Length: 77
Image 1 (tube, one colour):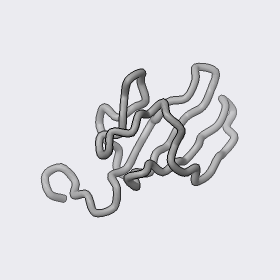
Image 2 (cartoon, helix red, strand yellow):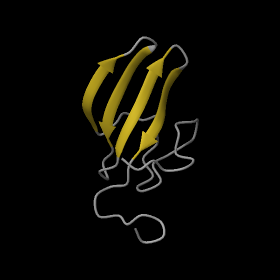
Image 3 (tube, helix red, strand yellow):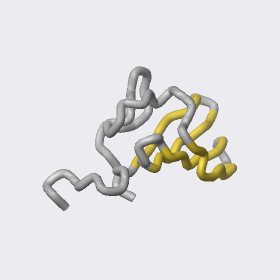
Image 4 (cartoon, helix red, strand yellow):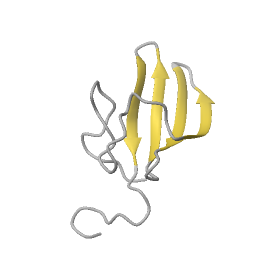
């Protein structure tokens, strides 16, 4: 999965591909996994971007997200 710099979940942050707010409900929950600190939730945005959300005592934040299928990487790769 390719991470997007600056795409971590913060107040007012949104998907860089479609603009869906990070604090909104995800389009689709792909899987949930319990961790020692809380849980990890893999979600898919409406545009197709796969996201990893960490849920713990500090709340929910997106720690990584991929490009949607068909969107070229920066630099054309």
